[in-house]
Image 1 (tube, rainbow, N blue to C red):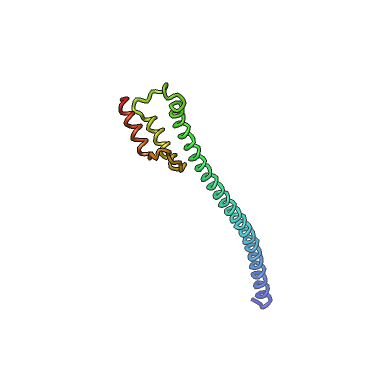
Image 2: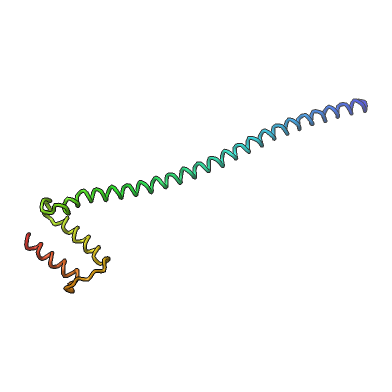
Length: 136
């Protein structure tokens, strides 16, 4: 083999290698673009997951508030007729009456109102309970 043949062979190999490098560089550019898009999609997905999570927390909080409101309404449905028409509501176990006394018992101390006859709330409740016992 002559020197010129050797140079041509080496030049051809060099050209092949440069072509392969160019193909690999294009492939690397495409892969980099795909990775950037995937990264961008991932970040968008993470943001969406966080937003959805926050919305679910808000929905759960609202559900809890609504559940509490429903419970209050169910309690009111049973209790308010007793307050309005105590003589027409059957309360054989004095459950509704006890609830009313309990409500007043909790409410009265917050009013900071003294009784003019210097009676204590406990005295009043004992009196009411003794009267209640008479009617049983």
